[in-house]
Every structure is written in C-alpha cells, then in structure tokens.
Image 1 (spheres, rainbow, N blue to C red):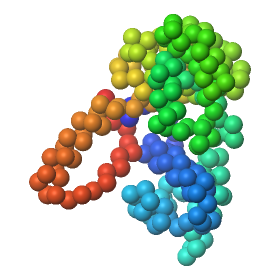
Image 2: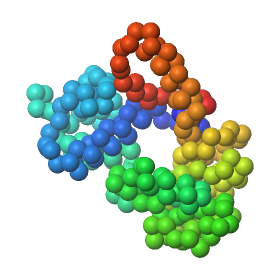
Image 3: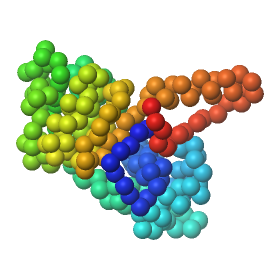
Image 4: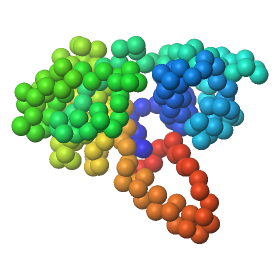
Length: 232
C-alpha cells in the first residue's frame, strides 16, 4: 500500500490494524453470536497475536477490557470508530465507470460497514444519466466543492490510468481530504494537504509467487496477513 501527504503519531501499521479490528467487530455484531471477546479470540480470528492487538488498542486511550473477561464488542467498536473519526453517516464519492462501481458493490459490500456512496463520477460518456444507489452519475469534470458541502471528505478512485491524476487534482480542488486509489498507475505528483492511499494489487500478486515457491519447498500451509505500506 502506498501512502502520501499524511502524518500521525500512531504507526501506519497499527492504524490499518485498528481499521481491520473495526471491520471484524462489525461482522461480529451483525452475526450476534456473542457480546464479549478477548484479545486472543480476536487475534485468532484475524491471524494475529493478542499482544499486538493489546498494543494497538493502547492508542485509543485505554484497553476498555476486563482481565479474564475481555472486551464488550459494541463498546470496543465504538471506541475504535471514535478514534478513527468514523461518523455514523460516512458518505464517500466514487470516481470511475459504472461497471467498476457496480463491481465494487458486488464484491465489497461497503454499505454493510457503514459507508454510504453519495456521489458518482465517471470518465465514460456513456455513463452520464445512469443512476446508482439513488445518485445520478456525473462526468468527472463535474467534480466541484459542491460535493464537500454534502459532508463528503473521502473519495475512491478507480478510473482508467489516463484519468487518474486529473481526477485526483479535481478532488483536491473540491476539498476532498483523503483518497483511496484502486487504479494501477503511478501517482506522479500528489496535491498538498491531502492523504492518498493506493492499493498495490500488482505488488501483492508478485509477492504471492514467492509464497507459492516457499510452500512448494516446505509444504507448510499458512495464512499471510500483511498490513503495511509497500510501494507498487
């Protein structure tokens, strides 16, 4: 994962893991299997270790757990959400073709985790006038400060590579503060004053060839969870 223009007193890896914990706790609340979980149980569910989770939770101002009992799932999720500044209504803008947008909804149920796609912009002229999630798809050139007036501060960009930098520039001018980039193209110059995170899918695939080779030699099955910054 590549990140630019953002700083925090918390290590990036811990920040990413806190977001991971929030997602897992949301799943647990939706499943309604139990009300309390220990750090070891959460660690096992995520392929981590309990000590790592307890260290990460110190960043939110306390562990909020009881020794020998664990954490109240709802309370812990709320505390992590507050630390991450997640609003109860979390609107986001999506920039990319309607084909891409619908694929994201199909494979990543973002609404289940509290995000509300509230604005859509596409580089494809054929998408103009199409409606998704109750919103009319607008051309990329329509990105303006009007979107931040609706409370949108975060955007997801999954355009064709030739539209990437132009889209980022327009979003920055509109007042968007953070952008998740799914497009596999180089970000040549990030605008000042915003945070950009880019998922390096091609990098992850390359690393999998290493793990495949290692498993062929020692035949040891494993689950690898990488939560760290990596360049594309």
